[in-house]
Length: 217
Image 1 (cartoon, helix red, strand yellow):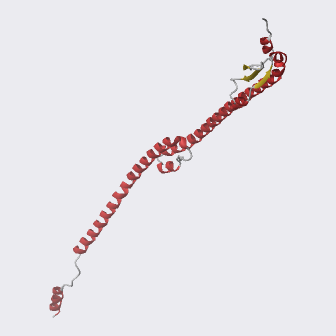
Image 2: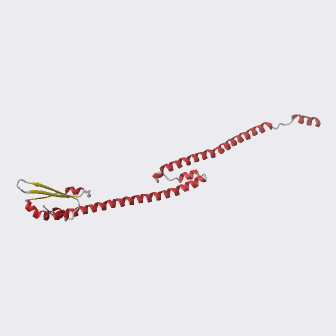
Image 3: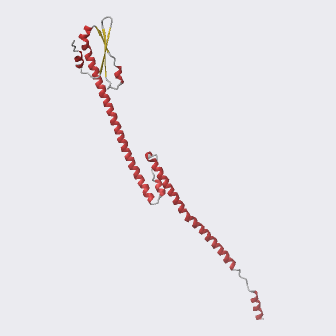
C-alpha cells in the first residue's frame, strides 16, 4: 500500500528530532503525541517545550493530522534556529571578549615591563658609579611591580651587600686617622713634659756676689 506520509513530513522543512508516539485506544481512537527536539541547541528552555497531543479516529487524523502539526512544528523549528543563532553569537562575543582581555593584559604587561626596565636602567647607571645608596633609593617596589618581585628582591640584596661593603671600607681610614691623632697628641704632651724637666728654674749665684764684696774691700 502506497502512502505519502513521509513525503509530507519532508515537506515540513524542519530539522531536529521529530518524535511521534501513537497510542491506540479501546474506543478505536488514536492518541498521537508529536515532539520536535534539537540536540544542537544547549539552552535548557528546549526541554520546557511540551509535545503536541492529537486524538481522533484514523480517518480524522488522516484528514487533519498534517494540517494540525505543520504550523506548530515550523514555529518550533524557527525557535530552535533563533536559539542556536543566539548561542553562537554569545559564544563569539565571549571569545572576542576573552581575546580583548588577553590583548589588553598583554599590552599592560608590555607597558609595565617598559617602565620597569627604564627604572632599572637608572639603578644600573648609579650602581656603575658606585652610588649604591642612591641606587637603592631608585629601586622600584614589589607593590608597584608585583610581577617582577623576585627580580626586585634579588637586585635589592645585591645593592645592600655592596653598599654595606663600601661603608665598611670607608670607615677604616677614619679609624686610623683618629688613632694617629691620639698618638700625636700623646707625643706632644710627652715632649712638653721632657722640655719642662730639661729647663730647671733660674737661681742666683751667691759665690759670685761674695767675691765682688771682697774685691771692694
